Amino acid sequence: MRPRTVEEYVGQEHFFGPGKLLRRMLLADRLTSLLFYGPPGTGKTALAHVIANHTQARFVPLNAVASGTKEVRAALEQARAELEDSGRRTILFVDEIHRFNKAQQDVLLPDVEEGRVILIGATTHNPFFAVNSPLLSRSQIFTFELLTREQIKTLLTRALADRERGLGEHEVQMTPEALDFLAEVSDGDARRALTALEIGVLSAEKQPVEFTLPVAQDSIQRKALDYDDTGDQHYDVISAFIKSMRGSDGDAAIYWLARMLEAGEDPRFIARRIVIFASEDVGNADPRALSVAMAAAQAVEFVGLPECQLNLAQAVTYLATAPKSNASTLAIGKAREDVRSGRTLQVPKHLRDSHYRGAERFGHGEGYKYAHDYEGGYVEQQYLPEERRYYEPTDRGYEAEIKERMEKLRQRGGAPE
Image 1: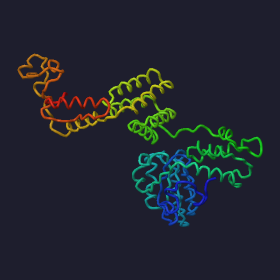
Image 2: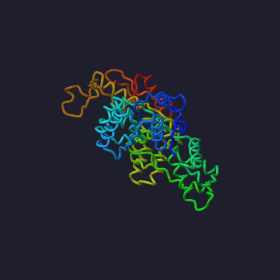
Image 3: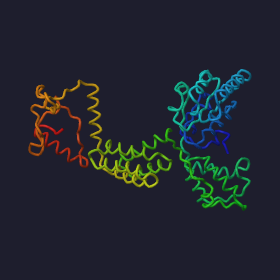
Image 4: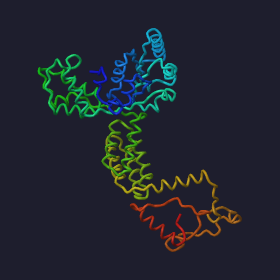
């Protein structure tokens, strides 16, 4: 059911719809090398075939997993020969181009730069990380999005009606519930939806095929999550997880936690991020947050999966719903910047170590006031040789009490250190 024409192609209207950039480039015959980036089953290979059919170019597919430098050089030599003999250009389609190493990608550069081939590279990995900068700079990047439910339904309906390439020779009675289910659980992956449809129809024992909701449920396999510990999804999902907790959305945070756990993420990695978050984003607005986070991290080591998901869930919901403050985060950032860029401040003499013989000869510790000897456990005293302000408490959660206390002490002549 791969589309053959521009009109048959479904999806990616944001760059291939009428009047959009890639369609204009194609219709004007002004194609440059292209990089297609997006999830599986969203039409990257299909669009490469559509482009080749429209331009009447010679289409040479390579898979980076199965092809080495030798195969790439051979394809480029054939492309040059075809251009010299007939003037016909070659579209070199490299699937999973992120799997080519630097040397293999560099082999493509001269022919891409001279326009002897139109390279179309497809990848599920962020090309800014996976593709060499020289090749990247010579290519137009198009980001593919997951297909919508309605687009999936269009493809399924078309497959049921097509007698030549689809399932039109079979009499299929598809219920609306089954169609909706396939469109929903395919997660925008056309290949997954069409495979489930094919399995359901061809495995039926009776004609006409009663394609009901139970049939649809039996026909589709559990989706393998597009997630690995070095790819985009790893970083994007953990980013969404942290930002959801920071935004106090416990439901979203729990979803992203579940997404990571289902994909096989190391729970210790999740626990480390939770511990960091407790200080970075909750801080003294709720000092218990760090204790909760550390307890969850210890539970991960002590209990392990699957039960430690309960400990992680408790910590995540606690942190997400806790009052937030990044005042301590900002404080250490400002202080370290001063240390790196400014003049080093000397330790005042009265604060220097006086617990060794001869310290008094240097005046170390002389004049130091022991705070516990004074009312309220506080005494006005200079702790920096010049005034600096780093920690500015917010008025959220427990930190509001800290702020009030510090303001009162400052009115007495200084803030506690």
